[in-house]
Length: 322
Ligand SMILES: CCC(=O)SCCNC(=O)CCNC(=O)[C@H](O)C(C)(C)COP(=O)(O)OP(=O)(O)OC[C@H]1O[C@@H](n2cnc3c(N)ncnc32)[C@H](O)[C@@H]1OP(=O)(O)O
Image (tube, rainbow, N blue to C red; front, side, top):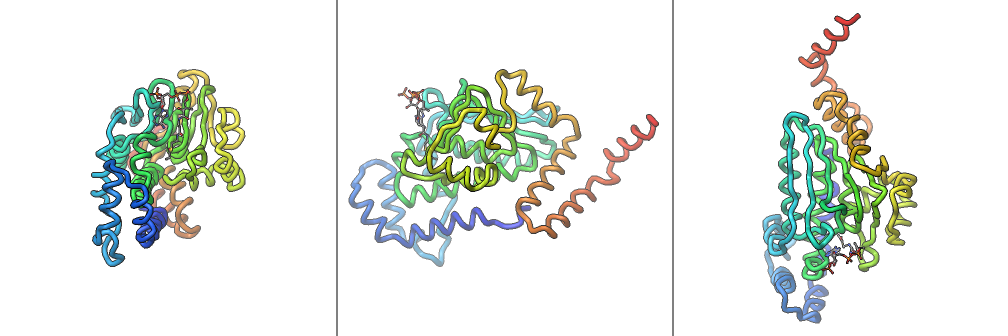
């Protein structure tokens, strides 16, 4: 269990702030006078006292799911191999370089929830179809939800999905080829490891659209490369190749073909799934908890494995070979 619910709380505060700016948002929406679905939905939300009242719950996941379900296209496939404990997530949106539609965000949420319950999982590898990783949010969908309230709702939902992905009890690997831009760069930065192809172009390009990362990617990037590099990459919207990513700590491994990346991935299959999951719990606790709490939790993880069936079998095997 996470030590605190910081990311979610901060995103919720953002929505509260947005909603407190009700007057300003209403005027902005009135000026836009758009006739599309999203604008109407935003106006309904702004006019609705149920989401305005600070006493009531301001963010409703079901409302956001409903909103996202109106923007279809593409698919995210999940394939789990029970024998190896390896799952694969394939992002596919033909003709849009695997950009996220609303329904793909919902599918990712459901797949991450399923993986969080997979007791024997060792790792999940995330890859895009047809030579590109993901070019972020589908710009046609973005255009239709370009209001402060709808943006906050989408950001809370997807931010929470990527935080859950980051906190999965198994190893997460981004297998990155071709373009990984905007939200696609945010997705890969939420993973534990990044295997990056020599064909890759990775960029936090949100600034080109006059915005900033809002799915947790700014935070994950800062943790990966340090604040000065993260600031430079976000402020410049620079697109990096694989070797630059490796130099900055945004890539763990650079490959030029599938067999190289498979060989690199083999390292995560050398120990039991139990040990892999224990290691993941320990590093998550070290990231999220204070020092003494992290030490306590590490002892808990250790106590669950020590003297267990697998430990005793391994001891017997090693002792037997002496
Ligand atoms: C969370 C916030 C966000 O993620 S905001 C989104 C950030 N992403 C972007 O700004 C990427 C926008 N796309 C691009 O800059 C270019 O398409 C890139 C990826 C550089 C590829 O350029 P190029 O090789 O010339 O191909 P192209 O532009 O003809 O693209 C092929 C077709 O794919 C589409 N595409 C690409 N990205 C998206 C996207 N994010 N949303 C919707 N459609 C996308 C292009 O529009 C193009 O479609 P079409 O062939 O013109 O119908």
